[in-house]
Length: 164
Image (cartoon, rainbow, N blue to C red; front, side, top):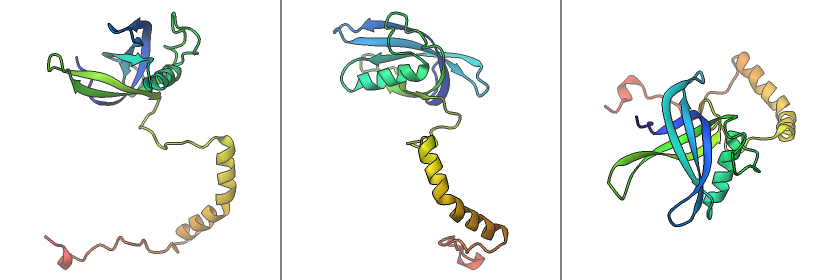
């Protein structure tokens, strides 16, 4: 069964270090795909992640998201500890023309996808909250009192102005 394209919650089940025919080191990681409740769907996919060039950084980050501690290249201890969010894409093999599912990214677990690109840490969130509390409270009070300004740029055309 081919895993469909898109974002999936998954858990690594095993990992092993290997090398391509040309000698490039990589890690193969098997993932079980999970449903919304965290139960296995019966689907699995292998991620081949390389330790060369720019790929190395993404490989190490992906393994860390899985729970790997960064020091065990023999058993990859911890790699099965966390649920992660994987992005699966389909690509066509140049060798045989068949389409295959491929793990493109391994990210921290997400229920609905990435909400923000750069999450604020605790200190930055506290600072932002301090700056915004008074302004936010004033706007919320106006909305509750029915005094919010009319939205801009949302004037709907009248029935006679509908262009179709």
